[in-house]
Each structure stands twice: as structure tokens, then as C-alpha cells.
Image 1: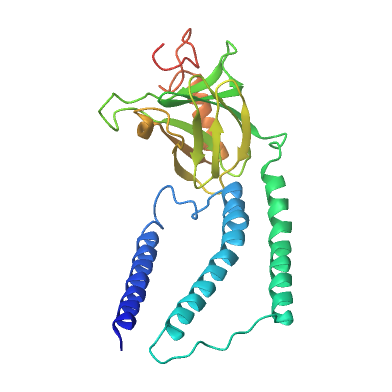
Image 2: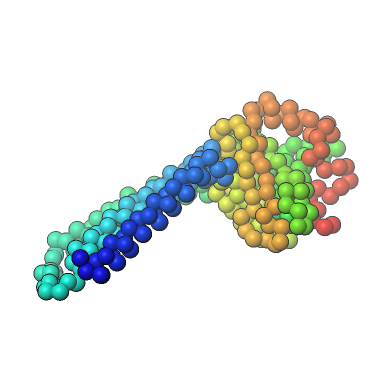
Amino acid sequence: MGVNGVQMRRWVAATLLIAVLALLVGCGAVDDPQNTFAAEGDVARKQRDLLIIWVLGPAAVIFVVMQALLIYAVIRFRRKKGRELPRQVHGNNRLEIAWTIAPAILLLIITVPTVIGVIDLGRDAADDALRVRVVGQQFSWTFQYPDLTDAEGNPLTVIGLPGEVGKPDTGRPAELHIPVDREIGVTLESVDVIHSFWVPKLAGKLDVIPGRTNSMWFNATKVGSYSGQCAEFCGFQHADMRLIVVAESEEDFEAWVADQLEGGGAARSRPGEPALASHGE
């Protein structure tokens, strides 16, 4: 075997080793609290199945097949002393028709359910959805429930506390309590810079832009706590801009609401305090 052949085999072996290591590293994220593939909501599940697996799955298969053919061709037909060029084939009409029609059919199969899914994900929340106003501010979240008010007409408001500069994990992430198996209609606003609202197990990310109100809907199909964060770099303490979605039974949610409105919880803003003041005010 020539020097070129040895180098080629080493290159292929190194490539396969890197690919295997990358696969093993990715498998270690199965239990991650922000694992997109461990969907626990209808929106996250549709995004995973339709927009990730349904689209990237065929692409990944095609990529692997084409790379395998390429590696085979590079090794099988590599230049050797005394070897003639392989027989050249041009103008194979059947082959050209096949690789024109096949991708068109594949695109049609992918497009129809994907478009249907995108339209469903982009619709307005259901009429009986729980409405929540989400406000991003450096470097915390504020959640306001417009339909849940106290005796004075003040809406229930949950305010997260940003951490101290240079001291990670010193803040208090805001907790968004929601009833399980019920749609949540969310409006997103920002009082300073661009943020991004993201709870991977429940829904994909959506930007929170100053001067503009974006909206989305999601739900949780399983009781539990779901970690989220700002997914748009918004300043030095961006990494501390976290949030927690607490999905609980309807009874537990109503008990939590009653406790907050009666002043029994520290999450509710104090009377007279601006509910949605920006950080630093």
C-alpha cells in the first residue's frame, strides 16, 4: 500500500472516530432540563416531530449516504501507478430523470405536513386559554396574569429578581405557574433591549422586541417544573436571565393563585409598586 493509501485510511478512521465521539456526547444530553427532544407540550412536540425530525431526518439520511458514496469513490478509485481512469459514463437519461423526480416527491412529502404544522403553531391561542403577559428586562422576567386580579383590581404579577453583577445564581428566576393540559396565550414585550423567550421542553424560542408585542401559545401535558431562559444575548448578565415554568394540576394552580392574591406569596408585587418596572428603576 502506498503512502497516499495509508494517509487516506488514517483520515477516514479519524473522521469516523470524531463522528462517534460527537454522537456519544450528544447522547449525554438526554436528561438535560432544557432538552428540546424531551418534549412535554403539544407545541414542542409538533416542532420536534414536524420541523426537526420530519425535515432533518431525510436530510441526515441523504447526507450519510452521499458521504459514504463519496468516501467509497475516493478510496476505490484513488490514483495508483499504472491504473487507468475508470470508464466515464455521461448522459444517462434514466438516472438524471430519477434524481430529478425523487427529490421533488420527497419535497412534496415533507412540505405538506410541515406547512400544516407551521399554520397550527402560528395560530392565536384558544378562547379559553389562560392569558399571560410576559415582559423581559435586563436581566429578569416579569409575568402578569391580566384575568387574575385581587379585590382592588390589581392583576397577579410575578417578578423575577436579577442577580448581582459578577455573582452568578444570586438572583431569583421568575416562576410562571400554569395549569397542566390548558393552553397558555402569551404576549411578549420588552422594556429595554431584545430578549428571547425560550422554554425548550414546552415551545420554541420567540424574540421579545422593544416597541413590539409578539404572541405565542403553548401548554404542558405533564405536571412538573420546566427550565427556560433568555436565548438572545442582552448584556453582561444574560446567562442569569432564567425562568421556570411550573405546570400543576388545576386544583393546585387555583390554590396558588388564591394564595398569591391574598398576599401570602412573595412573588406578587407590593401594592403601589410598579408591576412592570424596568431593572434599575
